[in-house]
Length: 195
Image (cartoon, rainbow, N blue to C red; front, top):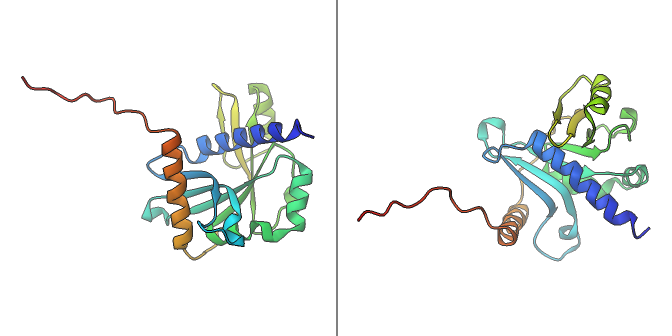
């Protein structure tokens, strides 16, 4: 069991890497946050974390907000279905809510009506052709890293109120922590020195 947790964490990271590359690669348009804690305080609701949260920065795109909940095992997914309050905050702050899973883990009929499914992972070109043949919606495949992502159950659009100041503060804190851990690359430009 101790070996299982790191393997599942690595798989979750890989799935979110594929989702970010496929759906949110444009850093000018999207802010993509992983392991976002909802709120900044220590009361009960602020301890909930969203696996990933994407915010579109363009007003003409409606400032679209998407929440992703990663499920790497059926047991974890079935537990989520028995406890729908776990996804309450994700549904509250997003216009679309997706479960992110490996291919074929879920039957579309067992997905709650307010949610969608994104299947992601690593596949050889032959495996990808097989996966792609059973799907007619959005799909992405990167032959360099063999990563794939496909929306198998589109999430319905939900009009929700905008984020609270608590969520905005949590997002800013998250970004600050990210930059402190990994500062941005220095600019490629050089200062011209006049003599």
